[in-house]
Image 1 (tube, rainbow, N blue to C red):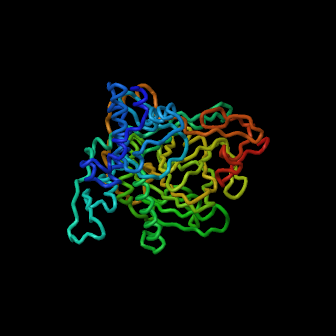
Image 2 (tube, rainbow, N blue to C red):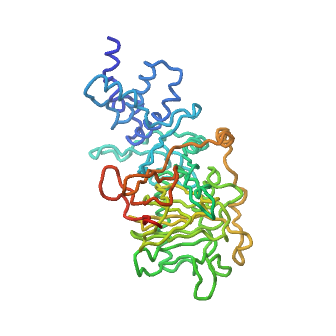
Image 3 (cartoon, rainbow, N blue to C red):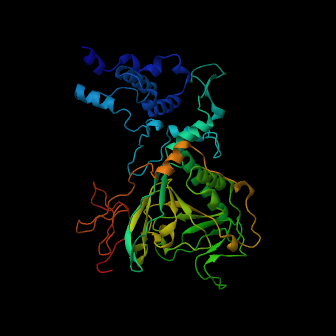
Length: 478
């Protein structure tokens, strides 16, 4: 009888958000955030509790959310139990237990979640319409009272604790593998690559994208220095990508004045904006880039559908490592020691790595200097920001280091130090499997890439059409 009673929904907790006097002081959005946050920490909060107490705590947390608090009705009691047992399937678990976070390779959607609480008052700025953390209830529209009811201030964790939670939820992949024969030797051309996800919340990504749009408009109006903004004419597919450069002006090819590719010593560009300095500090503090390689320049690439970047190796006027951050849409970046152009925006390469929204790809070692890389024609609008440190001997004339980018140090957490010593990494396999048209051969960043394999578009398992509009393929005998 007790087991049957346990399986039944608990009606007293289903509508707690509508009846509990304490919860009535909070808005539905506050309750939804609290429910998601507490559910994430349920494995930690319920440690050493019996099964019955753990279930009661889970039910209480579920009841906070006015939308999802209702317990779903399944076809059988057993299915009901399974659903309840899996209620924390997507939670972080306890960081002390070393619990793994979700390692799915799917592109994360840009939704606001509990983690965004961690940046309400950080350097990216407060959320819009936050009313300084105080919610004002104006009451019913028929209410004749002119004075609204001021409800409780949003409960928040200390800033350091919120940053710690987000930092420990970052997923890092550092074991990319793709072997090719280079100068007669078999080499892992992806050695040194790192992919970091979870660095920027959805709200932060939105703020950065909006700021880039404002910079783009300033560039079009001529309000930036002469070489900061560039918008070439689109004379064919894949040509005409707009760029915004800060800290230095980089020349991709020999220009009309005979300057070779590299940093131009006398060209004038704007200094790094404050918001981009915030990004740089995040990259150093959260162990994405080393404190010995703090970026002092960056370039914003604004892609429209069909735009691309041809095969190249970044000029050694910039030291290693450097990184690129992706916004607005997911796309592939293709690597190979011998990339070839097969058509407008189409390249022949060995391996394609998906770059999720908000992800940071760090290039170092063979991944930066042995393998070339390119971005095929993107399927939809995309923004990337590449942060690099200039070689001191190649800095432009009159360059002055930014004072607020000096002395940045990474966060020192015991778990991170233990991870470095053990050589482990959080997160899972971010790479998808790529097969040739014959259905054979494993060609992803975790496996050996044969020089005779044929590579084709990545296809969604549920659809017959390519997931990406950009094509990268290898021809027989190449």
